[in-house]
Figure (cartoon, helix red, strand yellow):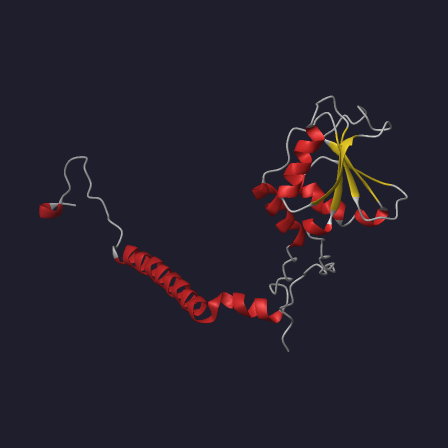
Length: 205
């Protein structure tokens, strides 16, 4: 081209893309983001007012709960005063039976015979002691005496009387403290807790 429109040199003007296309793209992205935020906010409001359907699900379906086991009634145990105890010493320690009998008497037990153990038990009890009595003593007198002297071996014989023999063995050191014996007795006589109501939810109509 000639005249004043003649192009000189080797540099040419660059052609730019129209800016309105970029604005359209940005506007579209902004609209998508705005719609997403609006939808999320709506879901949050629904959860707030409906509790996220959690309560409805809990009320609409029954919970899987194990079948409660039958609780056996607590059997009344005899009082210490109602238990007659014969105290025998099967160790080589002199006077042990007398000392033990005096302590049991202080704790409310009725004391019978006190002396050395019979031949079948003399120096033949390696543990703390042996409780010997009629079969009926197994879940009564033995239980009460056991709170005073843990670790004893329980044996029954053919006697018809309710008295119990306490045969002191080589490992006998001392009775339980009164507090320990009381706590053990309380645990034995404490009634079982009532079944929980947490599994009583049923399916609603």
